[in-house]
Length: 302
View 1 (cartoon, rainbow, N blue to C red):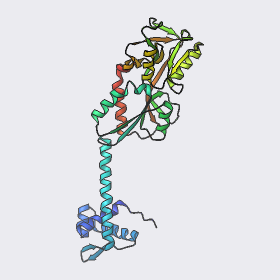
View 2 (cartoon, rainbow, N blue to C red; view 1 turned 90 degrees about the vertical axis):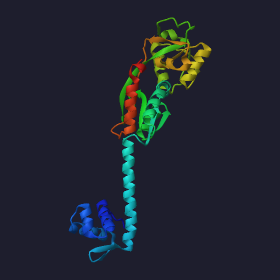
View 3 (cartoon, one colour; view 1 turned 45 degrees about the vertical axis):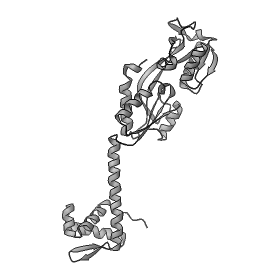
View 4 (cartoon, rainbow, N blue to C red; view 1 turned 180 degrees about the horizontal axis):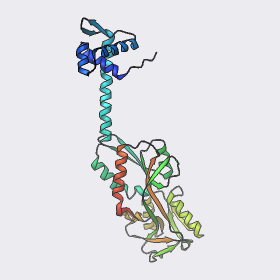
């Protein structure tokens, strides 16, 4: 049979056990002696056993009372520790934070954010996971991620977004490339151009494919690579071109490369914070988001 015991009853019980006296216990916890006696009787009735051996005005714990005392003390110790842990969590003195980030943002933005966050809050265990946009949305829904930095708007109706910045995609190529001296390149000029691109699973690649299709151009796909660093290094080695966010030029692998604007169509995408709609936002996630917004500023705007 399941017995429901109120914490109030346990507090009263421990007060009497410590004072070994009903009147003194009542004074210590600021209740009347009759009220205290009534609550203890109710507890004994709920448990179906006697907890105190009453000897005149003094009381002693029965064997059952000693057992309950040990467990009740552990309960309140656990509650106190839980309260302390929660206070530490809200004060960013403990806990963990899992953040999902798309690769193209992770490559040039996350190191700075991580450095700022971990310097300010070294006791938070921070886990950054580089994932596809679809994986980030799925894991936030499942509660496996507390926050995402991805492309918006999200496809899931269970998520909400906060815009961080929008960025343009540009043609990145060696300065020796035949198109490098142009101020602007139309997508139809990429017809039969050898390109090194991210695979179709990447949002960036889908935008590029849409741009080519809109212009009626079918570029020559030279290589597909699943990392931005790899794409840029291969552009360096082959002399071919790629289409990536303009901010990719900040990476060391892009040293010596240049960017040319794309048009007809011009490609832009929105990057933002993703949260579970109406979900609980832990203090660490709110703080990481605030640091992200503050860090971006003009340095990350395309």
